[in-house]
Length: 141
Image (cartoon, rainbow, N blue to C red):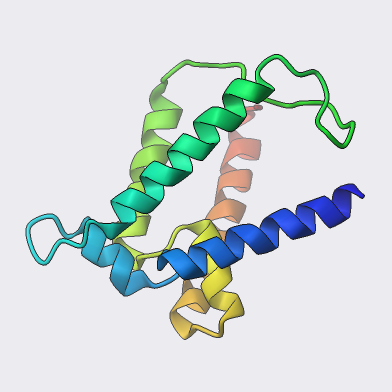
């Protein structure tokens, strides 16, 4: 049942990305172009996502298990450290260069976008390098 619920959630998420335009790098780059032809429509998409997420986290905060009976695994740390800020900066720079972030990149890849293939390969390479760097540095979660 959990696999089916995960598949359904992923399909709904992907469909939402397509309908909202988040899988279209030109639309995303238009949103990020504050000094040019700014397209504010994705701000409404993000605002809606934040509102839904805030309600879900509010409901989930006191639960020990999910509706499917699996343990709840909510973040416990609220610390803003060098790694969080650095990762956020890298994410934002990558998003601004490519017009994709991981979810929309995978959706666009599924839609046959060649640019998404380049993005996903680069994303996976970056993840692999991070794992190697963390292992070499001896840093754990």
